Amino acid sequence: MKKLIILLTLLISYSLHAQHNAGFNGKVLMIASNPAVSKQTGWPIGVWYAEVAHPYWVFSEAGYAIDIASPEGGEIKFDSFSDPEDNSQYAAFDYVSLGFKKDPAKQALVKNTLKLSNVNPNDYKAIFVCGGQGPMYTFIDNAELQKFFADFYLTGKPTAAICHGTCILLKTKLPNGKYLVEGKKWTGFAAAEEQYADNYVGMQIQPFRIEDEARKMPNSGFVSGEPFSAFAVQDGNLITGQQQNSGAAAAELLVAELEKQRKNYPTYVLVHGAWSDESAWGFVRTQLAVNANVVTVNLPAHGIDQTSGKNVGQADYVQAVTKVIQEQPGKVRLVGHSMAGMIISQVAENMPNKIEKLIYVSAFLPKNGQSLNGIVDKFLNGQQLDIFEFNDDYSLIGIKKEALPTVVCADCSQPMKDILVKYHRPDPVKALNDVVNIGPNLNKVPKYYISTKNDNAVPYPLQQQMIKDNGSVKKVYEMNTSHLPFVVDPSRFLQIIHEIN
Image 1: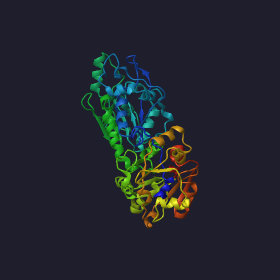
Image 2: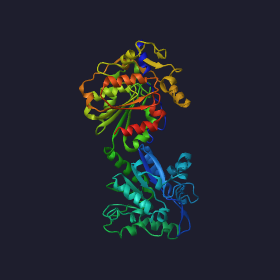
Image 3: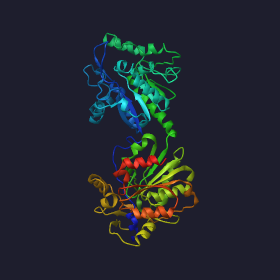
């Protein structure tokens, strides 16, 4: 048992305990109007609260990160009638928007929207154009926005607009000169709803009516639902919503379409190392998901998993990873950190036809019949290291808290080191002694290795030796970090991941 000293190598990864699943599916861009003044009423106008807050909630709940842009960038303003705290009490029922208004983080977004010309559309899996009274002045003749919308639509990714934001569709054309919505089913603020609004305030509010203009267009497919009901329609990747009460419905259609489009992106399955859990990937998961599907595995007896670690072995880890991979529709790019190198090697041997690539991150790279303990023991020549501690029956092993930060992440910031200690959980000993059963299948899968030159956990010389002994690693990348390269230098780590293509 004492040979388990070997755990010198199994490394804990940094535990990022952020909002669960926030941004893990990629990013959605919401586009809102800059402030303007209505020539009809003289009112200051902008975006409608519910048309930002309600879709934002749907996207966030579905695991997407959201950016907000506007044609000019900077602060956006909300139509007064849409403010739940406005004296008119017109939107007093809208508690979702009230919560959005009271959240300092959300208000920081609306005070500092991105300028549309500075936005890289490739960073987003979908776009969503909001309405309000402003777009009827700021969007209707905005050629830049219309081109942005058309170009994004042509990528095949979900492209949405709601309420008065759909006014852009009255003029948006495709490169062939035809209107984007020609022959398509779409909706927007209805003429009956305009009439209600005009009656409510006693004057004509808008300079024109979207429905009236839409029905004059060639091969018009404009439709409308009951006034002020939640009504949204989809035609291909074009999604439109009728008015402020349709924002969530349109957002839900968009999320459903994103789920269908998962097949268009590569899928990464990320497996953490010892004394860690899935949150280890927190520094890179959201950004990696910009142009990929990203799934993390939480191994049995790690993190918040309630499994007792006393009898957990490598077979349990392999089963957990296999289950996740089988749930994916196509092949996956399987990434393993540290101890997980043992796991992903066995998984690839068992199911090579489901693995597109193997990426080892400062990880163990075993040969047939080897255990993690055996690899380390051989490298150390039986040397004993006084950094580990066991439970009473030697079924669990941990790293002494005074040694943990130096062993795992000497170049981490102090707050990160504190988190490593705080969330440390002893690991199952059995899994470290279990051997892999590897045959010819493993060599059918391309292998890549990200090596860490300042590693106190899986030392750089050991990494080099395993790579040499394996003899089939397609390419090796090196990083000048400790054992947690995705924590210490996430930008460079992601750059390497993208190069492995």
